[in-house]
Image 1: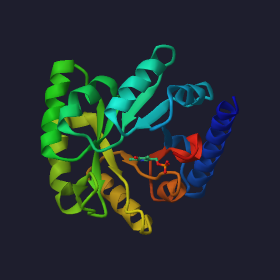
Image 2: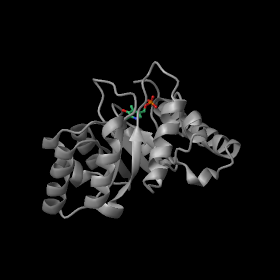
Image 3: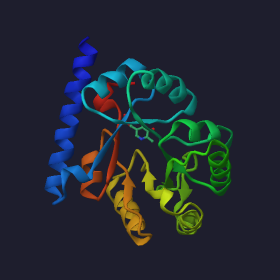
Length: 222
Ligand SMILES: *Cc1c(COP(=O)(O)O)cnc(C)c1O
């Protein structure tokens, strides 16, 4: 019970901070969408958030999301974003359950998703993840290859491609990375910029984020 109450309270606080950050940046609060990241948390936590008014959730593992959201969707409506690095052999499962896949980052995955969408006759919206810090261990297309890959995906997926996503390096000031991503999206005429997590979503909003992905500030530590 106390968990349910704190999720509702935490959500309200995060929404207030989003609104304040948007207004401070001369933007409208309703132009920033909160994606509540429920990875590692149980279906009950998702349902508590839905009952507190949250509609959109992010999960980074397809298998975990599949089980959890089957349970959630038996009784509640939820919009699901896959936000983690995606293996091609998980593409079909991702297409089946996701409303948005935020982690398109390489031609082989674009091929696998296109084939899966044909088979499933389901077309989730897509974001391209950019590895803005060019970190070896991280998912995302490298900065140098981003323009080419974005152009290819626009040609292939058209309006299904909404925008760009990033997770900046943990040990650096995120601001220049956020600014770079927002600028790339604008140059390609893409309207959605998914960036900012619990530690830095206000900075991301100041830099033009239209979606923020917030987990621990809502659901507690993992
Ligand atoms: C876990 C995760 C988040 C949320 O992180 P918090 O620090 O808990 O807010 C956002 N984006 C991605 C890609 C994640 O994996």
